[in-house]
Amino acid sequence: MSKSESLYAQAKELIPGGVNSPVRAFTGVGGVPLFIERADGAYLYDADGKAYIDYVGSWGPMVLGHNHPAIREAVLEAVSRGLSFGAPTEMEVKMAELVTTLVPSMDMVRMVNSGTEATMSAIRLARGFTGRDKIIKFEGCYHGHADHLLVKAGSGALTLGQPNSPGVPADFAKHTLTCTYNDIESVLQAFKQYPDDIACIIVEPVAGNMNCIPPQPEFLPGLRELCDQYGALLIIDEVMTGFRVALAGAQDYYGVTPDLTCLGKIIGGGMPVGAFGGRRDVMEALAPTGPVYQAGTLSGNPVAMAAGFACLNEISQPGIYPQLTELTDNLASGLLDAAQKEDIPLVVNHVGGMFGIFFTDQETVTCYQDVTRCDVERFKQFFHLMLEEGVYFAPSAFEAGFMSLAHSQEDIQKTIDAARRCFVKMKK
Ligand code: PMP
Image (cartoon, rainbow, N blue to C red; front, side, top):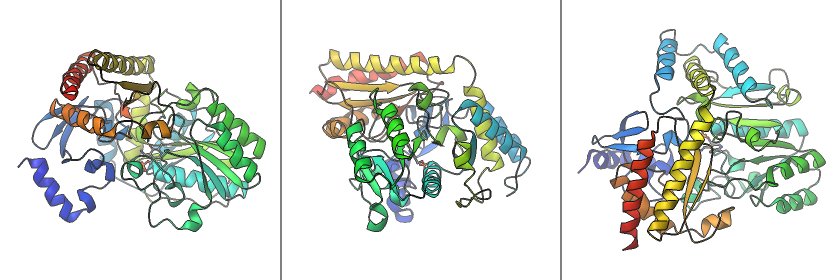
């Protein structure tokens, strides 16, 4: 029995499903999850000492690669001065200044501890500011696990086949209107039905929780227009895309200005951090300046802020995003080429440092319905063959992959060569 197998057996007795977050359990692909001992650069090392080229990157934060020295040193320095004060610090001001400079649509920002908290708080703020109850989200998009957002959600909720989780009261869910991603007409219909009741739209600007679906050119500008027309706020959830698709996020890449932005993952450099922010008049409605309540004992934690600040400093150096994009482009074109040589129908979507692999003979994959028509069994087979080859992709056909700046061209070539060997086996 491997060490991962024995740890998993023990974990299942103590932790529901043996994991502290569902997708980690390999629910989407079957088999025993790897227990990780350490990580460095582009590599993960499991409890049995095997190395893997990692395209999960802790589900997004590790844009610089694992255990980056600048982040590690910033954390160690912060730790030496104490772990938490529950009182304001200079680093929070520096962090707020950096984030609002990097993302110009954010006049003000508030730190929280996860992406879930960021979206939950942004929606409460939008409801409090507009005095309206209903929200619009999109099928297959995931925005964390707050009650009103677990309606037709993606990510683990999709993998587990439970888009509507038990435990979410129908009275909450009824305020969540679900539209079709990349279909502006479905959003118009929702506004026509409830012209005065919709507080906000929340959207993943590149959907990353039903694999990777970039927006059609008219989609995000169309959402902006409808929000303006009907007096609703546009919340762009950049928890995954922020500092990954481009330095100023997907909103910059696609040229759309939201009223509020949610951030997570990279903003913490690997520590538990989220943030939301945007228009000054909206943000000032938050307690203590305004009536909308939101708080957190560990929000703006000094160690987490030090990690996030170091990470954002590193990635705001010139040339970083062209490099990240080129690495992702190379992986995508190499995988497509290898698949074509072996007659395996494959679509690869990619933007900046994120990508998605679809086993399908559809020409394009642009919405949730397209994703559900892909061959999940083939993905599972590919995932396990690649794992044997020492390459760790996200353990679900419904999750995006993440490139890091620590991936070398050699790592990418190794991945492509491994994929070609797997495609040969998959043909048999
Ligand atoms: N929004 C998006 C777009 C996400 O991808 C995620 C998590 N993958 C979240 C929100 C929730 O973030 P967290 O897991 O940190 O609560």
